[in-house]
Length: 203
Image (tube, rainbow, N blue to C red; front, side):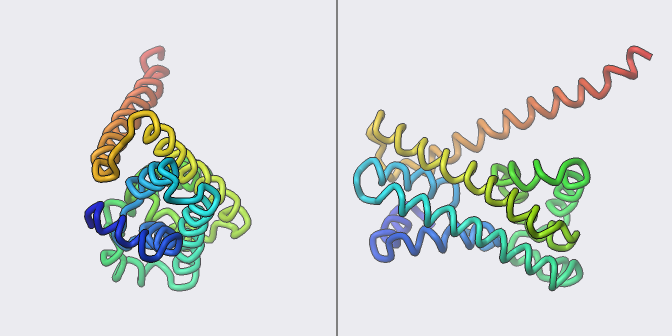
């Protein structure tokens, strides 16, 4: 979906389409997410959207998507997800990555998994299947949703005002953010790997 289509849908349906796009993106249906959040910030800076309503629509879309995916995982179960998950982007490779992360730290996976495409889609299903307590899941999901949606919207607002960004170029900025995120993740991974090897060298 190109930026013109997104702008057209926002113009027609307003905050409802923001909610739907974020909801679909979380449950695994292909939809713009980071680019949309950044675009929302740019449009707020251009006085085309209300900050409060845009943030609320984004937050509710992502958060309710997390809850629906959690319920599906809890009550539908792994066999169904394994069989039909491929239609919403749940591949075996992604599933194994989430499983390893959950085994290390459930909180970090739910909260910061939002910043990892693929992981954020599988994370709530996995939480439901593994019977993560609902209150715990809701708490971590709300925190993760807030820390994902608001900073990207605010970044779009301030960067859009500072550089007068044309909305058509927002997808390119999304790619830049993704590249920086991957570099940051790789650096942290290498640091942890080096730290884990250190005790064996001392022995």
